[in-house]
Image (cartoon, rainbow, N blue to C red; front, side, top):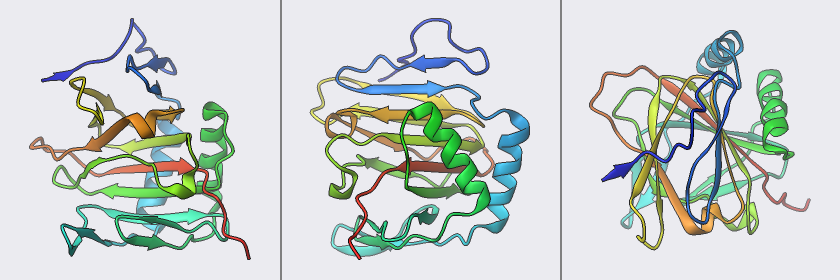
Length: 211
């Protein structure tokens, strides 16, 4: 069973919606990016980013992941997950703008971002936690949603609670911090609904490699 963790009547534009999750600090800032800016960001990123379909190591075999990705950030900000080592592309003007605005609401100075393009409802990302060593012990992640609405799932790693679910809309910013990545996992599952493309930007602060 999937539960709805929302607390109170917090759905007005720009409202901060705190999810009621044991041992996790997760807040959704609804419509933080208003439609005009969110539309512009989506169109620029969709058309100008050099999207790639990476291959991840799954069950001992390299397989194409069901989404397109890109990695931008400060120099020396390499990032590795699922056997994929990503070298940062320098910040663009639009990405730097989104980074700074997301950093304001997350109260964090980000130096890297992973972009995911979910082309339709069959693109997805499975259960995982953003707990790679280069992110530090209690990372803050600022996750920006642009485009189609998709359902985001969270579950505790120890299986002690049911999966919770929240819909993320065009312009929303979800902030995860504290012990969240060590105690919980999250995913964006496939959907049978007919949905358009969605771009997700997950801003983070990685430990930079020494030159």
